[in-house]
Image (cartoon, rainbow, N blue to C red; front, side, top):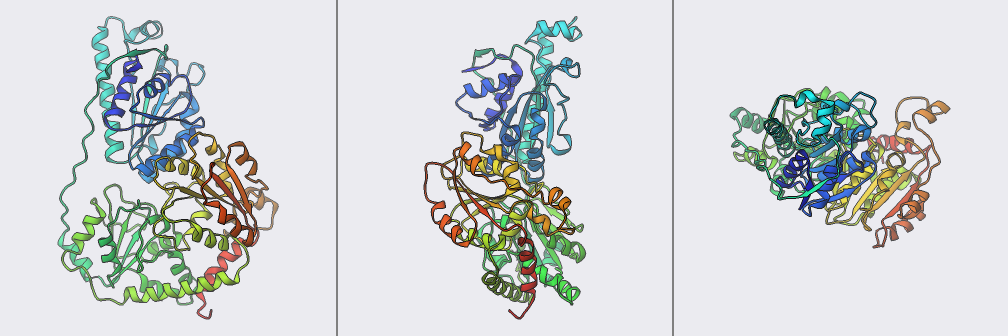
Length: 586
C-alpha cells in the first residue's frame, strides 16, 4: 500500500492501525497532507471529511461516545486545532476517547511571521489526558533542515540521529495511546512536517506492539464498608451520565427492591425500574417551597450516598447533598470520581455490577420505611403533573410532554443542553430509548454535530431535540455528507434563550432581551433548504400533533421539525409547575 514517505507519518498510521482506531475525521489542509494521504490510501481506515474543525471535533466526539472506543481527528496547522478545543474539553470531562492529531510547521518556522503558524505544542494542556509533541524527522527534507537549522546535523551521524527521533516519537505515541485506550481521555499528538508533503511510496507498514488491556485488581470490600451499608436505614444511589445497558438487570432489581434505598436517576442515566425516582427536581422543589423544609430535608438526608456514572444535571440534588451531607459518600466506577458534594470518602475503581453484587453478597437489604415514604411523594407529584398538563396552555412544558411521548421505541435520543435537557428531566421516557447529552462542560455548542457523529454507526435512527440557540450556533453541523435519511431533528424555537427568563433579573428591559435572552426572529427553513433537509413546522397543539404523524415516517432525506412556542409565558408555566405539585389540593 502507499503511505507518506515521512517516517513520523508512518509511525502515527501504524499506532492507529495496530490499536484498532479506524475512524478518522479529517479537516482539509495542506500541512496535514502526509496524514490525510496515508489514512485515505489504506482501506483499513474509514475517513470522514468535515470542513469546520469545531463541528468535526464534536462529530468525532459523538462517534466515540456511541462506539465507546477512540476516534481520531486530523487537522492542518495554525488556528485549525484551536477550533477543536470546545469538544476536547467536553471529551476530557465526559471521559470520551479522542486522538487529536495536529500537523505543525517545523519549530524553526514558528513565531517568524509565517502563515498558519501558532504555538501548537501543549495547547490543550489543562484539558487533555496527554500531549505528545513529536520530533521532526531528519532524513526527510534534509536540505531544508541543513539550511534553516544546520546545528541539528553538523558533525552528527544522520542515521543515528534519526534512530533517536524514531525512538522518542514511538515512546510518545505509546504514552498517548495508552492513556486514550485505558483512561478514556482525549490525547493530543502534535507532529511537525517539513515540505515536501505529498510524496508517497509503496511499502509494508511497520506496526508497533498494541497497547495491552488494563489489568483490574480483585474486588475486596472492607468490613467497615459492608457494615456501614448493612446498618444504614437511609441510602441514596444517585446515577449520573451512564452508558445504556452497562448496569445489569439483576443489579437494578436488587436496588429497586431494597426498602432502605432510594435510587435517583436522570434522563442520561439510561436505567429504568418502577421503583426508581427519575425526576429528582419534582421531589426536591416541593420541599424547597415547604414551610417545614428543614425537617423534610433531614428526613431525606441519606446515611450512605453511592454515586455512579458521570455528571449530574439536577442543581437541586447538588444543593441538597451539599447542605445535608451524608455520613458516607462512595463513588463506584473504573475511572475518575468527582467530589461533587464535598464529602467524597471512597472511590471504588471497579465495575458497577461487580460492586453491587459484592455489596449484597452478605445480605445488604435492611427493613426501612425510607423508600415507601418517598415513593408516596413520587406518586403524588406524578398525579399532580398529569393534572397540571390538562390546565396549561400551549407552551414549552406542554410541547415537551407531547414530543417525548411521540418518540418511537429503540431510538437514540440526543439532547441539547440548557432548557432542553432540563425539561426532559421532568418526564418519563420509554425505557428502550438510549439518551445522550454533552454534560461534561454542559455547553450549547456542538450538540447537532455530536448527534450526527453518534448516528453514523448506530443501529437505530437518531433524534436530536434542541433549542434554537444551540441549533443556530451549530448550524455548520449540517454541512457534511454523512447525515442519514433516518436522522431527525426537533427544534424548539422560542425566540431566544428561554431559560434565562427563569433566572433572576429584570425581564422587561431591552438590555436583558439583547444580552441575556438574545431575542431573535430566525427560522430554520432556509438552512434546511440549503443543506437538503426536509422541513416542517408547528406553532400550536393541533399543528404539532399533525406534524408528528408524518415526522418519523421513512423518507429519502433527513427531517427537521421546527416547533415555535410562546417566548413570554414559558418561564411562568415551568415555575408554576413546582408550586402546583407542592399543593396537596389538586
